[in-house]
Amino acid sequence: MTSPVNQTRTSLDTSAARKLASTLKTPPQMQAISPRWLLKVLPWVEVSGGTFRVNRRLTHTLGNGRVEFVATGADVRVIPAELTELPALHGLDDPEALQALADACVQREYAAGDTIAELGRPVEEIVLIAHGKVRKLGPGAYDGETTLGVLADGDFAGDGALTGEPGDWPHGLVAVTRTTVLALPLAGVTAVADRSPGLRTHLAEASARPAPAVNKRGEADIALASGHAGEPALPGTFVDYEASPREYELSVAQTVLRVHTRVADLYSEPMNQVEEQLRLTTQALRERQEYELVNNREFGLLHNADFRQRVRTRGGPPTPADLDELISRRRKTQFLLAHPRTIAAIGRECSARGVYPDSATLDGHTVTAWRGIPLLPCDKIPVTATGTSSVLAMRTGQENQGVVGLRQTGIPEEYEPGLNVRFMGINEQAVISYLVSTYFSAAVLVPDALGVLEDVEI
Image (cartoon, rainbow, N blue to C red; front, side, top):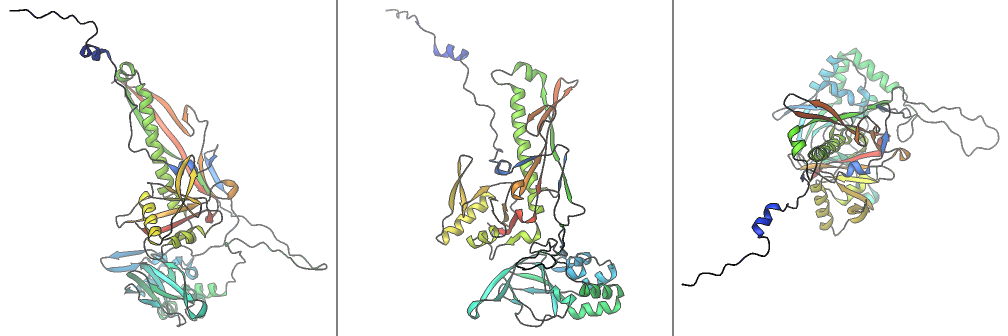
């Protein structure tokens, strides 16, 4: 029997070589990182003292809020104190009278298409909209009708009858969706006023009080003269300011990053473990920062939009007409922000009408645009359980009297602008701790810098 030929290897075996080869690695990946367009487009103002004050001209606005309600099953009642949101009842400090007015309200239900108030009919009640959407209809050209606006939850109509002759309805009210209304009859108001001297006096003073001289934005008027000849006496004037301007304090988002010394010492090649941990922690803080800028109840954009800058869709889905209505509320709308699902709904509505949105280039990226205004995705804008969301429209920058971001740079141990990492020590378990903090806020310099398209069905 012939023995096999002894074959000697002339090169290193692959299985042996694999033991010495290092794998090609990526840095740790993170799915939660989003484009964070809001942080990119906001101009950031340095707040060296930690507080930013917005000085404005004096503005006369009364009762421009919304009335709130409570529901027990299908029974809906208005909160008595919320009736002071009606201009004629603003400042009324008479709980008994407010309770009596709330008790006088009558609940009514309307289906889509029902008429709530008819144009030209006498005003006999104040309409408080508890839930639903109502279209205001006025006379149009050639005996037609035209839409004057949309009312929804918390809005009211007919309240001018409290301070003068009731008169007739200047517009009609038609339910767009199933609507719940609380009607406050004027006869009920009269009956309560007969029993309540405080309410009777308050309404009499409100009727006799002259309306303040204001411009179309509600600011105290500046007396001027123009078009005159000769030497007439010129009006004297001054520009009044708000006595108590709003101040924004920087908010904070923080966390404590912990890394074991054994990991930092032994497993930091080829990638530094502490640096990678800090990088991912910083990304998470930036995501939370954008969430707070949208949703925080103190300074978040959704909660700081002026009530007069809130628009509702005419039907439900976001149509081109709704977007036009939103951007027409302010000069120089620079950015639109919406949840990605909302942007998809806008695209569907445009396609159904044979209209196609524009595109724009922003920061090297091609994004969807409407009327040349970039429409940016922001997944921090909430989507409700009923499938509705909002669209933000804003003008930015101090030079434009717009929306600005607030931060302070140059803080101790700064890691990124407005974000620092401070060493907190090593505990008895040999764990290193770092305090990671970012300080920020946002301010709306004038009310028309920010608008919201609400109740968008997606």
